[in-house]
Amino acid sequence: MQHGPQPELIESPLSRTIEQNGIRLIINIVRIATAPGWSLEVVNENGTSTVWDDPFPSDRHADAAFRKALAEEGPEAFLDDQ
Image (cartoon, rainbow, N blue to C red; front, side, top):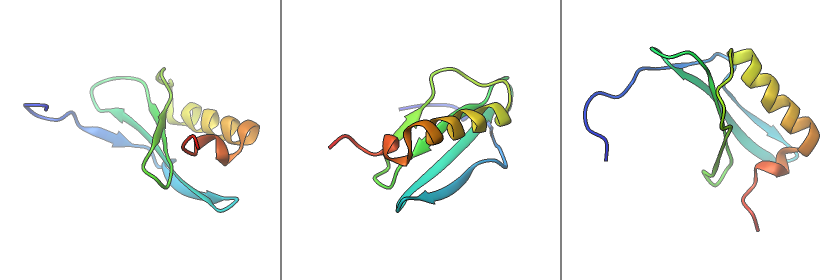
């Protein structure tokens, strides 16, 4: 449980929802207003998220990392393990 004010998040205009091969993914690219570095999170239809460990220098770098993972592994890489 967190107490106190929550940090202000800035959402990138590159955040979006996509559907590929019948798989819907939410791409969240955000940063804390007072800190450098962008975070990348991909959320699948079950609400399971994949978060990259290291921050990106820009939202474009974060988006490029998502696009690379999608091209190399496909949207199935973001599904829950069966």
